[in-house]
Amino acid sequence: MTLTKRIIPCLDVKNGRVVKGLQFEALADAGDPVKLAERYSDEGADELVFLDITASHERRKTVKEMVRSVASVIDIPFTVGGGVSAIEDARDILLSGADKVGINTGAVRNKSIITDMMDLFGRQCVVVAIDAKRNYSDYGDGDSGGCGGDSGGCEDSDARMGRTIFEDADGRRFWFEVYVVGGKQSTSIDAVLWAKEARRLGAGEILLTSIDRDGTKDGYDTTLTKAIVDAVSIPVIASGGCGSPEDMVDLFEATDVDAALAASIFHYHTHGVTGVKKVLQEGGIPVRL
Image (tube, rainbow, N blue to C red; front, side, top):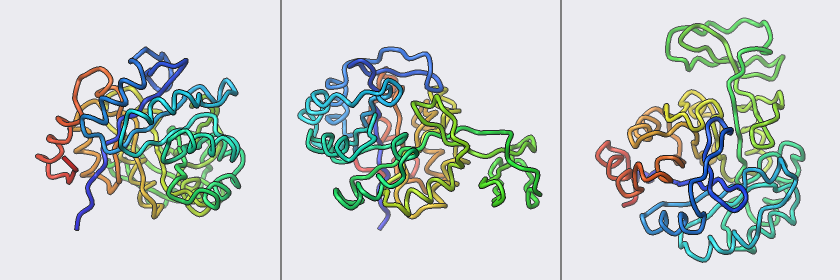
């Protein structure tokens, strides 16, 4: 039996308001998180993701009261992240009503927290968020292994540098670098290898965001998504770049990703969740209506 694909609106919150930007910058107001959460739940969203996007950068914790308010108006699974760096942070989020905890910067800086969270709360509660960006330098000078063509998806592992190397349509080599602190700090960590490590340590799910595509409405980075999906045996949520339901159709046709996350098309009433799912169904993508 074919599993249905999940459609997940994302609520990025700053100072108590939902915001949306371009490549993690130029944030604009998009509404009240509680009202938006209720609307998406009523429209048939499969899950929600709520991220306090400045929590790590400003060294503060996710506002528990807001989490409780959002959780009180929805009846679908709910992931909450932002500023999680200790078990106590994760516990507070779950006790406030969330079903899962998202962790990004905290996991990169302290890998053991992934395993600790899995042991205490169960693997199904642990969502490791990975923000990745294409890096066209610092990949070593090894042979690309015969990568070529115009698919943009050729892959080769450069073990000496800890890099998984790709080649774009113009023949330029690149790798995907992990960024933390709301996309503000590079890490020199390869995203594909980090996804594998996160799964090994206890992650139950990967929330994968392409910084290059974030807010552009140019479609998902299917090269990045396919590489991560093929590398791990846990569900992957793709994020960054959705500008239309057709972008989701393209994503699901090109990769075996489990879910598509989007923000702009939902926040600004460009498309409703129900309408998006109907387009997906017409495109042959299995979804829950």
